[in-house]
Image (cartoon, rainbow, N blue to C red; front, top):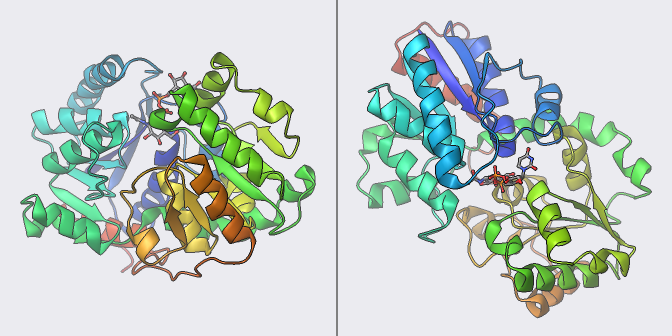
Length: 370
Ligand code: UD1
């Protein structure tokens, strides 16, 4: 039996890597890795394959950037050819990027069973691109693999068949835990002149945050304030880099030497950087989860989160985009007032094993080492 995995954008790679390895170790399933090419810069894609020990993709579609319609449509046309050629018994997609929904739509029209890893997350912001991708992908999936119980509840509320829902835990944490020790032994901190817990990390890339100069300017002003208290390392996403240049906002960096823009980092480097930080400010979804697993305080610079468990149980606080509120929240954390949090259920580094076993049972193939 054959499974096709779809990857395309940066947050996909660390979710698929442990699943791919667990399937190889525990089942006799044949695996094919398809890269849509949604992300194509070496620092947004290739470096993750090396860091995560993922084999080179069997198929690379080279789709690249474009409007949502163009990008998704091009992916669909190419994916249809791949699925018709390889005749998979199951297609597995992860997360909520355009590559995810493109594969889900094609799979569904060809009546190929579909598994969605990270199913059931909801921000309830209707036109957020990722929310559209999540809702539609879940609706089309035969196996809904959820990272937390709130995701199960969301799916049930939408009328999903309970038999399709499987609470397997958070596969992103599998990659994090597998990398952490090695990541902390790298010279990342030394190279940047940092000491453990002596710096903050900021990432921003949501269109709603970076495409509007007033919002991006406000966010940079708040982060610049944080940099007056400790160095802030800011790995800049290509979208954000473009917007900072176009909107004439680079003065925030010029006037605040402790606000330090760097190129996007590989997985290992970034895990080492975040695991030893004092504070993270971000609009990323994955980073809210990783900081919860690491016990590092996280301020989420968005109005809501599709990952509420990181707030209820973890170290995350959703502070929105108002600069004053962000400054106050950051000052509080830096003054030592933050919640410790606990590790959510099944964020134990073994979600990928549960997924591999489930795929094997679903496809009725022998599990080799249970
Ligand atoms: C995508 C995902 C988002 C995810 C993010 C992680 C969707 C709808 N969004 O957003 O959920 O959090 O990836 O990074 O799928 N670009 C480059 N080099 C690259 C890739 C992109 O320069 O390798 C630039 C291009 O100018 C491109 C822009 O970044 O137009 C946006 O890329 P795109 O893939 O459309 O979305 P992301 O913002 O990366």
